[in-house]
Amino acid sequence: NTHLNPKYTFDTFIVGGANNMAHAAAVAAAGEPGQIYNPLFIYGGVGLGKTHLMQAIGHEMLKNNPKARVKYVTSETFTNDLVVSIGSGSQDAFREEYRSCDLLLIDDVQFFADKRGTQEEFFHTFNRLHENNKQIVLTSDRLPNEIPKLQERLVSRFKWGLSVDITAPDLETRIAILRNKAKAEHLEIPNDTLSYIAEQISTNVRELEGALLRVQAYSTMRNADINKALAADALKALKLSKAKGGLTVTTIQNKVAKYYHVSIADLKGKKRVKTIVLPRQIAMYLSRELTDRSLPQIGMEFGGKDHTTVMHSCDKIGELTAKNDDVKQAVEELRDELKN
Ligand code: ADP
Ligand code: MG
Image 1 (cartoon, rainbow, N blue to C red):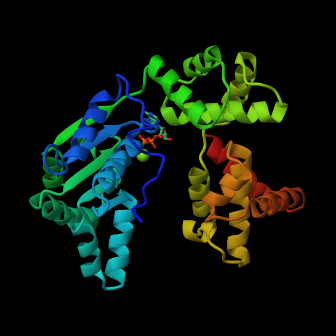
Image 2: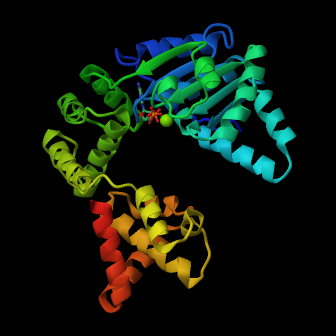
């Protein structure tokens, strides 16, 4: 199990002006791992294809050599694995695991910022792999020297190979991405509608895909074919929900956890004590109200709970705010703080 998303291959990656350098470097690194750009450092804003491209290198390498040891982790997982290994006295196993890869993919290394222990350990992981000509690929939302409190020796190593950026795709690329996605989802969408969506959504690829799914959901709901007018309605609704403040479930969880002095783990966990159940239900309630996430999506973000649990929580808090002043006040304070 390499934790690669099967969809994130080179085949499904659309190349355009904004990503052709990064794409070419990724293809080269996959073709001759450890030989050309080591490490390969891909950086850019969210939703622009860094994770996709990085994992495509993994797929390609496995295609060429099914026995290759490919490891993909986010930087947070690397830290967690390290912490767990220290806690359980299994640091040797941790080191063996990370230092024996043929290809190590670490996603979003900007989260190494400030983590001294992680940086120390990764320094040694890096050195070992590099000495053995094993390919290392890193992504980040910024350049190595822009990551706060990243040790100088790591900054310099991250620059040993090649740093390439990915920027927002131009209109033609966005249309091509939508066309591909529509095909993959077996959607019949006229060209002028695809162009319209691509013109409206110019931020990043994830939003572009989200918009397409929203249009698709709209057409199912209305039992109508997808055309420009329907897309316009769907995107208007999407923009309205964005205008709700662009809050995420994580932001809400953090706020509520702090307010009630409980841990995020407890909010996401299963404990049934009253002091945790109430904050958990309030966090779900506010997530439903202040984000455009669906009930199942909210359930997922609370440790994989069922959508009926989320629904029940929302009902419950709805009732409580009507008859319990403490709850009412807490919800109002939290809501105000989150909106500002
Ligand atoms: P990042 O890691 O930069 O935040 P992701 O790799 O997660 O971005 O990409 C977000 C979504 O957009 C994914 O579903 C990905 O498959 C898709 N995507 C991004 N760039 C492209 C592209 N050039 N071609 C096809 N799909 C893309
Ligand atoms: Mg990513």
